[in-house]
Image 1 (cartoon, one colour):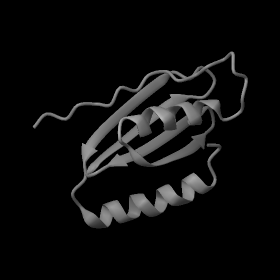
Image 2 (cartoon, one colour):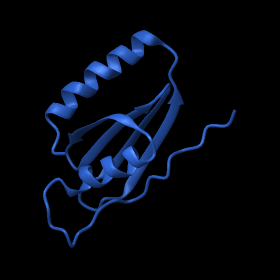
Image 3 (cartoon, rainbow, N blue to C red):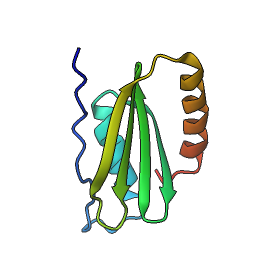
Length: 99
């Protein structure tokens, strides 16, 4: 089975001028592709996004100033303990996210 990366792209809408517009747009893109447990973590000008659908885990990094997708990776997660850690980390990150 070949894994197909989700269709992520630059989601920045500079005309909106809204704080938090990038995470909202990314969340909508991923949710539309069936991803859940979507979490955001900001590190300087980088926005780290993690999401999960079934046993597939997605991680992506966006540049907050431009909205450009800098990197992304997807992998099959079959380790239940690792999924639990990701879930707990995602809940904490979502609670403090701008989205």
